Length: 134
Ligand SMILES: CC[C@H](C(=O)O)C(=O)SCCNC(=O)CCNC(=O)[C@H](O)C(C)(C)COP(=O)(O)OP(=O)(O)OC[C@H]1O[C@@H](n2cnc3c(N)ncnc32)[C@H](O)[C@@H]1OP(=O)(O)O
Ligand SMILES: [Co+2]
Image (cartoon, rainbow, N blue to C red; front, side, top):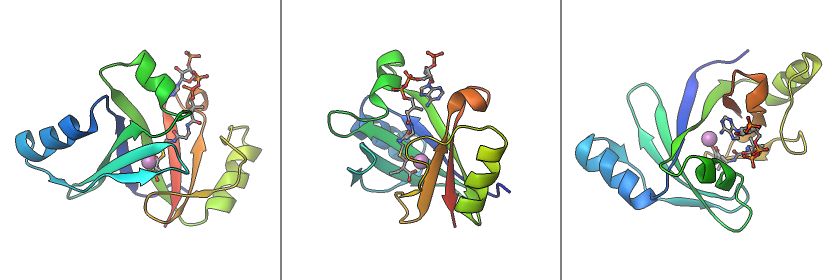
């Protein structure tokens, strides 16, 4: 069911500093910040030959990543995003297997304009999983 690793997301305390680090110290191709109010984050994508890094910074009062940054003030790996062909079929299969789909259970449009869903970290070895339909 899951396909390619679309991105590894890192929550950061300072988006500008983290972007500069990837661009200047790690020599990566860093995109411009994108506000995603529907998700409560500002994101920066870093294109790599085989996947992407998604830098995340809280946007707005009730950002879903604020709790994570409060617990991890220097930042940390926040989630893995896997690609799926059919996000509704994936959701239904995962739910049938007892996995918790976060939010309403209906996919939202993510940063790439594709439907995304999130699976509870406690059901996947302490790792927040995002699914993106490609
Ligand atoms: C623009 C979209 C973009 C894209 O790629 O297209 C994105 O990726 S948007 C990314 C931001 N959106 C989300 O993360 C949505 C899904 N996340 C959530 O709903 C919350 O973050 C949630 C429910 C996973 C955690 O929320 P919160 O931290 O406020 O809740 P708790 O404190 O109750 O946490 C419960 C439990 O889980 C642990 N936790 C929290 N976040 C993570 C994480 N990222 N990885 C691993 N574990 C996590 C937290 O420490 C608690 O554990 P406990 O042992 O009980 O302390
Ligand atoms: Co993501």
